[in-house]
Each structure stands twice: as C-alpha cells, then as structure tokens.
Image (cartoon, rainbow, N blue to C red; front, side):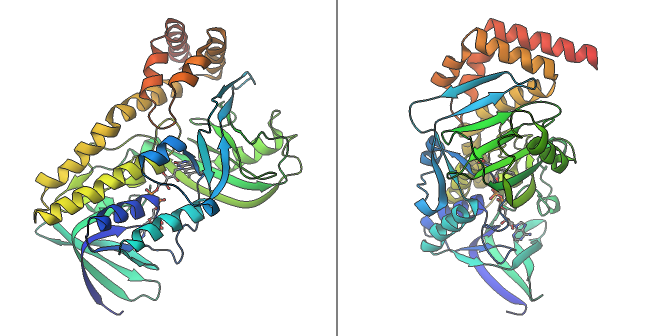
Amino acid sequence: MKDNLLETDVVVIGAGPNGSMAAFSAAKKGLKVIIAEEHPEIGIPAHCAGLLSVKGLKRIGVTPPSKAIENKSIKGAHFFSPSGKHFSVERNEVQAYVVDRREYDKWVASKAKKKGTEIMLNSKIEGFIQKNGKIEGVYGKTRKKDTFKIKADIVIDAEGHTARLLRQTRLPLPDPSKKVVAVQYEMANVYDIDSNFVEIYFGKNVAPGFFAWIIPQREGFAKVGLAANKRNAGKLLKFFVKKNPLVSERLKKAIIRELSASMIPLGGPPKKTFTDSFVSVGDAAGQTKPTTGGGVITGGLSALYAGYIAAKAVRENDTSEKIIKQYEGLCRRALGKEFSAMLLLRKTIDRFSDKSIDKLFDTVKKYNLVEEIEEKGDIDMQSHVIRSTLRHPRVVLTLISAIFDSLISS
Ligand SMILES: Cc1cc2nc3c(=O)[nH]c(=O)nc-3n(C[C@H](O)[C@H](O)[C@H](O)COP(=O)(O)OP(=O)(O)OC[C@H]3O[C@@H](n4cnc5c(N)ncnc54)[C@H](O)[C@@H]3O)c2cc1C
C-alpha cells in the first residue's frame, strides 16, 4: 500500500476502548469509518486495572463477553489511611467487574468492525492533511514504512494520554502538570485477598498524589499497582509490595507475571475539545476521572457522542464547528458537573498531609459517613456523594483544619 490514498467519512486515530467506541457509534449510523492503530495487535500493550462499574457499562450500553471478565463479584472497597486506619464500603449487589483490557479492547473493536469499520493495524498517524488551516484527514506510515493518506470528513482523535497529534492543532491540551505516573504488576500466588473487594491505600510514602490498589482477579491472581505525581512510581510500587506492613506479608509468595506503566491525566477535559471536522475523545481529551483515574466509562460515553455528532455532521453535509460543537455540549451536559466535583475533591485531597487524611478517616468512621457513601455513591457519577459529604459539618471542619495545616506546613 505504497503512498496509498484512502477516502472515508470518519477516520479514528487509535483503537483503544474509546477510539473503537467512537467508531462503533459512527458506523452504527451508517458512516464509512476507518480506525488507524499504530500497534500490530489491539489491546497490547495493556496498562489498566480494568475496574469498570456495572452501572457505567450499562450507561455505555456494553456487556463484555465472559472471556474479557476476570472478576464479576466486586461489591465494595477497603480503604486504608497512611497510618493504617481502615474503613470499608460495601453494597449488596455487585458494583464492578474487573476486565482484561487486552480482551476488552479487542471486543469493542470487533463491535465496531461488525458495523463495517475498517481497522488498519501497524498504521501510525503522523499528522493532519490541512487546507487553509482546516483538517481534511490524516497521513501516516505503516511499520513497513509505506506512507498513506486518509481523506475524511471528520477526524476523531483517540490517541490516548500522550496527545502528541493534538499538539498539531490549535486546541488546548489536557493539563500536563496534572498527569500521574501509573505502574502495575499483574501477580500470581496472591492469597488472603477478598475477591469481593478492591483495596485502596493512601499516603505520601505509598503513592503521593494518588493511591495504591490491589484488585482481585480470579482466585490467586491480582493487579497490584499505584500512581504517583513522582517519576519514581516504579520504586514506590516495589516498596509497597515488599515493605508495606498491611500488604507485604500477603504478597510474600506472589510472582510478577506482567509489569506495565503509563500515565493518567487527572486535570479533567481542557476548555475545548473540537474544531472544524475534528474532535478529541478519551484520555486525549482528558476525560479521565480526576479522583480515581478511570477513563473507560467517561471516555466511552463521550466517544458515543463523538460518533453520533460525526454522523449528524456528515448527514447534514456540514462539518463546521457549528455542528461539531454539539459534541462538547453533550459531554458537558452528561459529565460537566461530575468533572467539576471530582476536580474539587482532587484539588482538596492533593493539599492534604498524611495526618489530615488520617483525621478524615476518623471523621468518616465516627460520624458513620460510610452509610451515606454506600447509599449515594456511584463509581462514575461521583458529584452527588461528593457534594453531600462535603456538606457534612464535621467533614467541612476536617477539611478546613487540613487546609490550614497544609498552609502552615508549606
Ligand atoms: C495503570 C492504569 C490503571 C488504570 N485503571 C483503570 C481502571 O481500572 N478503570 C478505568 O476505567 N480506567 C483505568 N485506567 C485508565 C484507562 O486505561 C484509560 O482511560 C483508557 O485506556 C483510555 O482509553 P483511550 O481509548 O482514550 O486511550 P488508550 O487506551 O490509550 O488508546 C489509545 C490508542 O491509540 C493508539 N495510538 C496512539 N497514537 C497513535 C498514532 N499516532 N497513530 C495510531 N494509533 C495511535 C495507541 O496505540 C492506543 O491503542 C487506568 C490507566 C492506567 C495507566
């Protein structure tokens, strides 16, 4: 396919879960769609814990096949403070599945393919075809160094957190200073782990700027990882596994089967994610939850809107901003207040010292806020529980005293 020129209605950059979801959504509406993916295999390399809420999967209309599901019984979470204080949140019904992202991504891509999407593997997009500043497609290279061009009415950029191509547009990027480095082991020989609960660990020595996690897969297997605002996340993870008093004994015999590392944007979507004939979705558009780093559901929902608006624009033969901006309108309506609330919580927690987090754990336990979290919490749509907990006088007092402490210490 030397110097190949292809033409299509929509070209999607990246066959991650959100790129494939956008392609599925556009192809379902009858559009001709091409996905260009730089890697030879979809879902590889995998770098994700794969914790997806049951409600969230329903929201994006997805029922993953059983071969993509590693654990179907997550009912809650155990939270641990820096000094080892602990509380648990548990519901009667299953709250989340743990999926294998290699299989999940392949399956979402196959859904898009079934609707007619063409998937070009080994095809790295290097830039945009532009005329008078307007994007009219993409160009790239295959692994064999053959060049290709794809002319398209709409380009959907789902390239992930690097947002390298997005830099070639005039659009703002997700705040790079708010990215955390995430490292994860997939481990075997893991015992004494409750298969119904994920474990979350806070603390400046554990995972500064985020948290560490243990996510049970099938019996004897778990994903153990952390993200941090420091480059040494890999060292922190080693330390967590080998030395953390609440963890090391249980992981003493564990074996690392797979190590992965990547970054998670936590600063929320930038001010604008569209221009004429172009939208960004998923991690490239900062659609990752600032509290937990999850981006498959929030990105997936936005990707569905991207495909829907792309179809509308092509049908109406108008791919100008006038139509394309409706994409961002839909995203804001569905997720705007969620992102605002999650950003507020992220900013607040980032100011906390370990002592303040410990105090917050005391407050949660003393005033039985667990019940409120259990009743109102939603893994993806967190604004309701954040707002209602922040309204609690004791929480406000704890927050004020934490912020005061942090001001004094800084
Ligand atoms: C350690 C870790 C744990 C996580 N855990 C969770 C979790 O439990 N739950 C959750 O919801 N989210 C989680 N996330 C976040 C989640 O992985 C991302 O939000 C999600 O992968 C974003 O999907 P995406 O399609 O936007 O981007 P990506 O998954 O990054 O996909 C981008 C795709 O684009 C391709 N690409 C990039 N550049 C080009 C190019 N120039 N040309 C062609 N192809 C290109 C890439 O190869 C890739 O396939 C986690 C992230 C990390 C790092």
